[in-house]
Image (cartoon, rainbow, N blue to C red; front, side, top):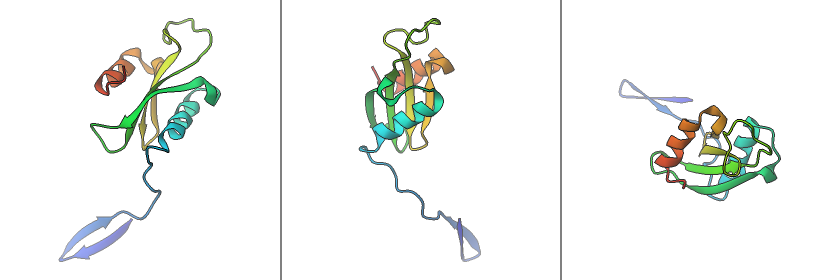
Length: 111
């Protein structure tokens, strides 16, 4: 972080970093975020919606993961659901709380 002193005040300026992701980067970043959370092959991760966020800078991604045989009901209707925020690669899954994923999906018009 660089500090600049201007008229007795300190102005903080961010150091150059990685470029912000583009829409073309989003599918790969979302799949990587989900793969870090659960061990599944990339072919098991299906993106249903990827779009610019209406509430924050960046993108939101909704999808499902083919999890095979599911015994707890969390992944009903074709697999476990996920929600990812890019940048940040923050991923939540049905296993983190079905109600939480419901809230994110509803707020971001995923279905």
